[in-house]
Length: 281
Length: 219
Ligand code: HEM
Ligand code: SF4
View (cartoon, each protein chain N blue to C red):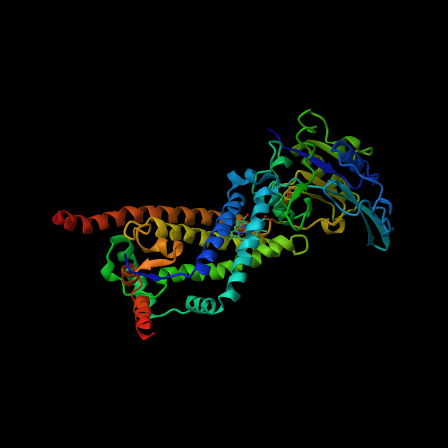
């Protein structure tokens, strides 16, 4: 099946945060007004950003950045949520298969079988997955954007747009076939460059073998707070692709070796013992 | 009555079996995370809770044992790090001994033969590796840098694979090896009742038997 994707164009984004609200509402991630009575110190931290970070009940969040460029201040917006990587660190380390690739390419999640190990939290190059964790017992459950494929709340299976895309008033978010959005994104980048945005680029075409959330950027990714050349860490590769297979091989060889030893040693033992035993009789 | 000699005092045997229980529980609940097709069994963290309870036992049991049996512990730990000529003799003889049942090839062994010493050495070293990497993954999960946590899983896995394979060997030699007939002769009894027959002691741990026999004469 053709891969699907989301294209986000910050140059069209008004930072209304409709996507954030739509995401919360559809996925039943209730938010409360952070007041002192609600147990949250709602001090002003100098930004319209809210809530302060992704959380188990915040899968999508708009980030605001004030960037100085050429003597003037630009106010930039970045959509923060799962990037739905093809080479996804989280899928690689997930021991239970709770995180897996959907047939349309994005990273779906079956929360019921999440073990709470939290390996995905450390393996994600974009620092996306979040858990509520009891540090003593270790009990935890992960949460992240599922691109609206959460079982029971699956908009994609219904043929609907993801909640965030559906909500977006200026159409800064688009959803569709990945190759078509790739072409659309490239066209927009070309248009930006023609207008003098020399650093304009399409983020997500090849990062981690292709993200399923792509960004039309008018400046370097770092300016938008996006990692340049993100990578699954070498430690994860060593752990998953070297140590684990090695473990299987060594465990298997040990058991085979012991089995062989049993056969050979029993033969040898009988060869030594049986003749004298017969003579005794 | 067969004449018997004491091989492991009660405290040592209790520690051995408590540690065995904890280790097997840790092994099984760890294996669930290690083997992708089993992973779903860990849903809702329950196996990880057992891993933590067993880990406490695994760490606390020796910490209680060591001060109560200080001299034996220090001696035992020294033994684990003392390697010499005799060990080479064992290594040379081991294939013939364990596969071809060639008892004549084996030089007399001390209280621990070289194989047992290797296992004991690993238990000590990897026990510490398990505990340190495990405690970091447990309590520093939300504060340590991701890269460090991943290194800890890696270390934990190396310890798991090494000690896991050796555990198979250890169990096999203690209950099933055809020549040893461990259930009928010494190995099982030594850890279960703490005693072995003089015959067994002489044939399997000749050097040790010499020592205790001489000691017994003196006293
Ligand atoms: C000494 C105390 C130990 C502590 C504190 C400890 C703790 C942990 C922790 C915190 C994890 C990470 C997953 C989670 O959060 O539940 C883990 C994973 C694991 N543990 Fe332990 N552990 C200990 C001993 C052992 C032992 C003795 C074994 C096996 C013989 C073992 C085998 C494993 C395995 C196989 C994993 C999964 C690693 C992977 O996913 O690749 N652990 N342990
Ligand atoms: S952004 Fe993070 S959570 Fe999302 S697919 Fe990539 S590695 Fe997984």
